[in-house]
Image 1 (tube, protein in one colour):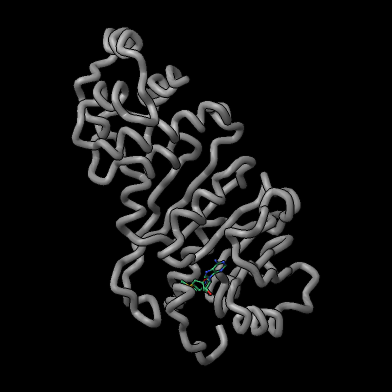
Image 2 (cartoon, helix red, strand yellow):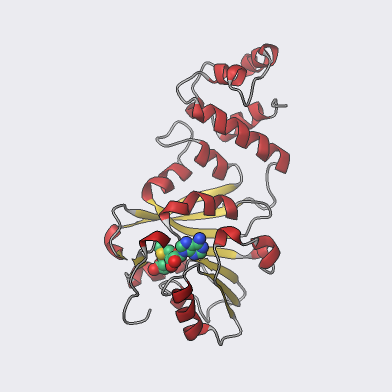
Length: 266
Ligand code: SAM
C-alpha cells in the first residue's frame, strides 16, 4: 500500500484494511496460482491487490471511487496483466464482460451496506469458481447458519442452495482505518459446479423462502396456504403434511426440505 492512506469516504463504505498479516491471510485463502484469473471488487488503495499483482495470470480491479482508481492506474495500469474498471460492480454484467467467468476467482473487502446485493450479483448464473469476501461478522454467521441455528433464514438458504459457504476466520475492527463499529469475517463461497438445482427451482425456492421467513413465527403449513405469494391449495398442503411435519416453524427446515416444498409451487 502507498505510505499514506487516502481520506476514507463514508458514502462508499471505505474502511481500509491496514493489518499486513490479515491482508496476506485473506489472499492466501483465495489460493492464487499463476494460472488464475482473479476479479477484485473494491480494491481501494490496494491492501489485497498488492499481494495479488504478479501472482496470477490476470487481475481485473473494479473500483467505483474515481480518485482511488486513478491511483491504482498509476501503480499498475501499465501492466498487461492488470485491468482497472472504474464502475459500480452492481452495474457490471460480469459473465459477459469477464473472460472465462466460470473459472474466475473473486475476492473483495466490500462495503457493508451493499454486501447482500453484491453477493447475489455474484451468485447469479453463470457463477464464478470461487468467492472470498470480507463481510460483517453477523452477516457471515447468517450465511453459514445451519437449519435451526441462530440467524438461519432466507439469506442462508439463498446461498447454501447454490454454493458451499465457509466462515474461515474473524477480522477484528482494529484491523481497519477508520475503525468500523462492527467486527468482520472472511467467507469462502464455492458455487456448486455444476449447479445442483435448476434455474427454475432456484426461482421457486427463493419465492418460498422469502414468504416463509417473512412469517417466521407461523407454522409453515399456514404460510403455504395463506401467504399471498404462495397460496397452495389445502389438498396439496395436506398431502405434503403426510411426509413432512408442517406444524414446525420455517427455521427448522433444511435446504432439502424447502426444495421439496418449493417443487409444489405453481
Ligand atoms: N480493498 C480495500 C481494503 O481492503 O483496504 C478497500 C476496502 S473498502 C471496505 C471498500 C472499497 O469498495 C472502497 O475502495 C470503495 O471505494 C469500493 N466500492 C464501494 N462501492 C463500490 C461499488 N459499488 N463498486 C465497486 N467498488 C465499490
